[in-house]
Image (cartoon, rainbow, N blue to C red; front, side, top):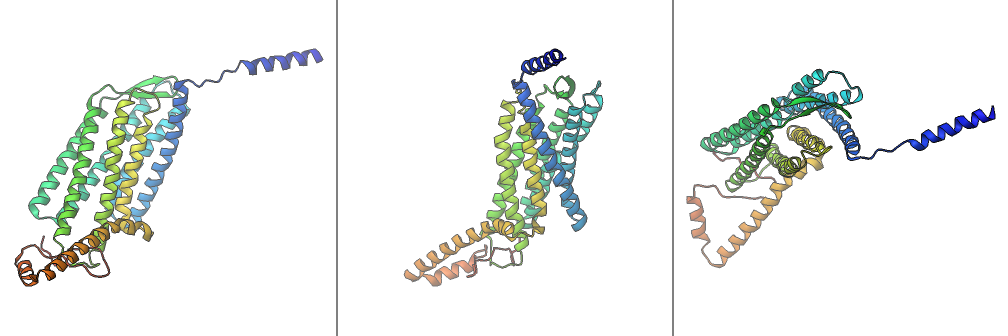
Length: 339
């Protein structure tokens, strides 16, 4: 009896000693993908619920953009997780869900930028410039979406030993998608910078009447800066590492950044955290303080040279309104200006 127990224990020890730990590149990559997909899935679900709640609460259609993008991205990652846990014999169902959930997880972000840019330019610019910026932005977004759906149509599903099901794409449209997305983001960022500059040089006075609008502009440009820099940095990484395992997690990272920024864009007027709201409006406060110093410097030089009378008369003849900044350093607005 003792000999049988000894033999049994020896067999167990031999089996344990024969267990090989696999830390190959493919296995490590799979672990990274699994962790990344689960974390991103949680974030997508979080912003989907938050966007749906804010949409019901405020009845603001702007929340449709992050709601649609987040829900489709969430469905896409859930599909990956389910088919990673259970490997089916046929990947056709996986592929159908993949294509369906990939249709609207990226385009809404591009159209949100276009809509926001059009809204701000309509308020701050003349009609000719408003139409120009809106048309160009619509063209860029349309080209991006066209390349996106053409690229989506080139995907094919394959059986993968480690993950069960996967997709492959040898199309060159992916590079067109990246290029047009970067161009679209850079144009939006540049256009908003021009709009803000044009608004500031045409200010007549500072008050709080248009504070909400100024917050909208300042927060929008901060989010566009984040989105644009992220795409400029991450898209080349995606291109370089496209043939390496696990590095397709960069797509999820960029998607999380874009959805987070789009939600913050539309949720900004409803933020209860004053520190967050004041961060955006500090941009205008900083610019206003610098312009106040410039005006003080000019006025001092004019008084020393005894030409203040001529200076004031010339200012009255100018078509562009002068800038008057109060002592409180309030945010600039466009009260009394015809734009």
